[in-house]
View 1 (cartoon, rainbow, N blue to C red):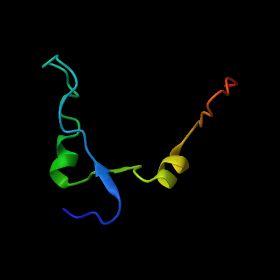
View 2 (cartoon, rainbow, N blue to C red):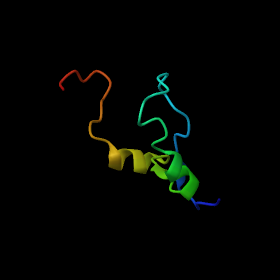
View 3 (cartoon, one colour):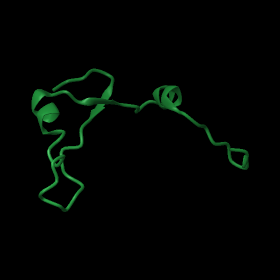
Length: 61
């Protein structure tokens, strides 16, 4: 698959050890459909999505 200049991501594995969990394959269909999520890869994309920007030495949150 080619996405152009945008990075895409998908968590395909599970992060839970309980095999009876109902949400264990919640991303499987999205993966099969190629419905990957946009990934903030470039600096300007990260800054657009930032909810809080920390500046070294700034302890006022």
